[in-house]
Length: 439
Ligand SMILES: [Ca+2]
Ligand SMILES: [Ca+2]
Image 1 (cartoon, helix red, strand yellow):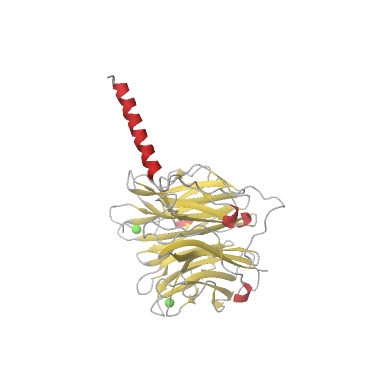
Image 2 (spheres, protein in one colour):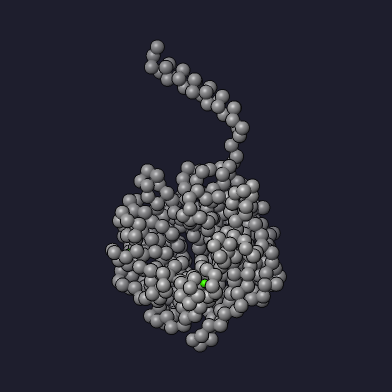
């Protein structure tokens, strides 16, 4: 028998065997990826913007309010030990079409010190600013200083600072929120403002400092109203957290905080909030955990407010935005981490998760308000074959949406940062009004 015939016959035997196996299993027909919404962005091919041979984590993407700059920052692991990390950045001056050379650069190199959780913002002078956790302390560095030692904002309380978020307003105002264990003996959310472009951080206060753990704060400021701070955070004992909102008003060098209002249910498992402003409207998204048939599943929930948002009665009901039950494969991260950007009055929310009927990997999914969330379709951004997590999105007002995320590569056992961008179609007049905001 010729070799080719042997292959052919073996192939037929294998095919018959496979057909029999498929025919004998209970789930014979594989489910398809969900249908995307009609106004989904036209995403580009993913581009590697961290290094092939080093792992990189927690990318954050920000846009310039005055030009075409897109900045991505991330934590790069430069050695074998997980503590050998430094903050890095990649910058594009043309909306993510091309990237400045040379390749990704360090914001700061501290060989012996663990550097984590870099976050960034760009002011109306076009200058970029970064904060991160440096050896447990919260530090800051202006773009013109990158490469040199940063400035200390907080030494980090008794066990270290965590989860800093930076917002730039105008050319000189910088606000940072973060959490650390200080006055209450448990994690508290703290705020600091610089009014001199990051040189000094003299306006400081506690945003939330009860005996419970307050953490994962997100901050938004309307550039037209720079002395009004909008903050959401999670609070509660153990995993029984709820999402809270508070508003800060800055007068001179002091901040007064409105009584925090609880947006999600008592003793729920609601965490990882994000928020977006649109005039007086606020939209908050977060991870909600639902127990079904003895197992925990995750959903993206949302809640909105049109005005008088310091009153709980001004907020609508909570809504299931993502629709489908999701899980995660590993404990880092444990949550599906929704991230939100706004374009043409539509809120685009992206998150990772495992749809156990479709994949064993975390994939990136997206829904948006103008397609009535999952009702109008769900985007699937990454293939079934790879683990993609921790997306972060930002936008330019003319319709460009940008995303950076982590991709695990089994062939190198490294996690790298990928970048994609997509143009969102400009909506027509017949569009849905964004749902869930109560008027
Ligand atoms: Ca370091
Ligand atoms: Ca606390």
